[in-house]
Amino acid sequence: MKKSLIALAVLAASGAAMAQSSVTLFGVVDATYAYGNGSVANRSQLTNSGYNSSRLGFRGVEDLGGGMSASFWLEAGVNNDNGSGALTPTNNQGATTGGGGLTFNRRSTVSLNGGFGEVRLGRDYTPQFWNLTVFDPFGTNGVGTTQTLNSSLGGPTTVRASNSIGYFLPGKLGGFYGQAQYYMGENLSNAANKKDGNGMALRVGYANGPINVALALSETKFLAGDIQSINLGGQYDLGVAKIMAHYSQDEIDGGADGKGFLIGGLVPMGAGEVRLAYSTYKIDTVGADPRSNKLALGYVHNLSKRTALYTTVARVTNKNGAAQALNGSVTAANRNSTGYDFGIRHSF
Image 1 (cartoon, rainbow, N blue to C red):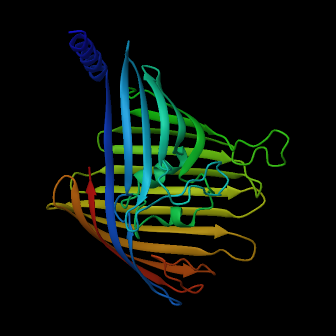
Image 2 (cartoon, rainbow, N blue to C red):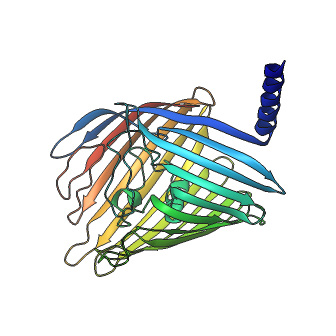
């Protein structure tokens, strides 16, 4: 009798907890056959993340009452072509750790949410990255990825930052949104590199109806020279197509400057979508200004809401000493490179 009462009490307590919180397992498995052609060497490989980045994640939220909630998000990058995990830069200074095991390198955060917005702690995307991926028809995945990201001088925090403290504005502000982030290199106070890997970033935007536009800026401290980045991106939904563009600029103190832009679009077609983009990035240095231009065209065919087939072709032209190559191939300075992606993506 006592055991039955205890079991009923445990079930009742469990039911109450489940009514106030939830945990979700999610992920993407994306396999890509990628071919790259260069003037020096070609490469053929089975890789991943040609359409969406492969990942395995857990996320959950707990209702705290009074309009407040707590949440967590743990997301690991997965190399499904060989079964390994993605590496992680732990201090925003370029070095990676993790040994290819399962690490929550994509995102590992805990948050407090309410009418005031969201305070988020941990490893996360940087504000300066969002405009590059949101306003790229290829979502910064695969051979069509914007040249601004491929050639960026933005340093190790171009995409994500570890040890970050972030704040997001609440969602109901008449279409306005924004975030601020501070991240730390976590060095000793008496070290020569005590500020290496520290940074601050801000992003503000407006999305309403067919329009979405945002501005981001950041400054990150590095021993090799502090980096200031600024970018502006936008999208307009015409109904029959979405047009999008972004412009970015990176400046290294005492070093080179980089400037790039993209213009492209998404065109629905039956059960799929055509993707196209032209992007370029130029590095201003003493005596040389290497520049790479990329033209990319792709098609995604949705077999269901979770499964899609896709293909992309891209070509890079190099000038003034640039030697960008696609899909792991190698090309000489001022020579061209072509790349192809064929893949399948399944999400869950």
